[in-house]
Length: 134
Image 1 (cartoon, one colour):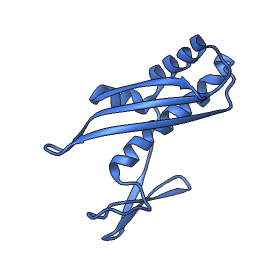
Image 2 (tube, one colour):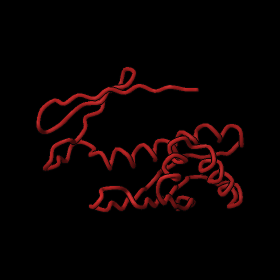
Image 3 (cartoon, rainbow, N blue to C red):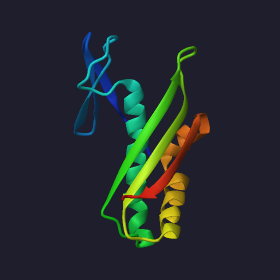
Image 4 (cartoon, rainbow, N blue to C red):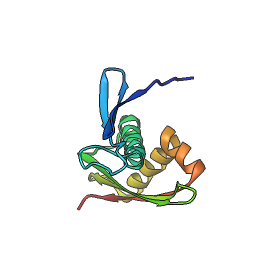
């Protein structure tokens, strides 16, 4: 089993900071919001994107899949009462010359082996597509 540790602390009424290993990230914990930091919902979506990109980094050598870049776009829908994410849609955009079949194989692997995406998919609707960069 792997274990992870993150700590977070309030800086002031406008923000907080989270730390893990030697990294820190500023968090938008201001009730009014702030444009220079991720709020909790955005951080949640970013963790899904990071999981997908890391999964791609993990499987491309095994699949001998050639790519030049990856972009993930996510859109989450949050209900107010009770507050929760009810659905997340994503688009994986891959810069590659690989065939459509190989692109779908990459997508299958990303969906099957992603820790965060599997956790989220068990709790809410997580749907998306993979496509080639134009």
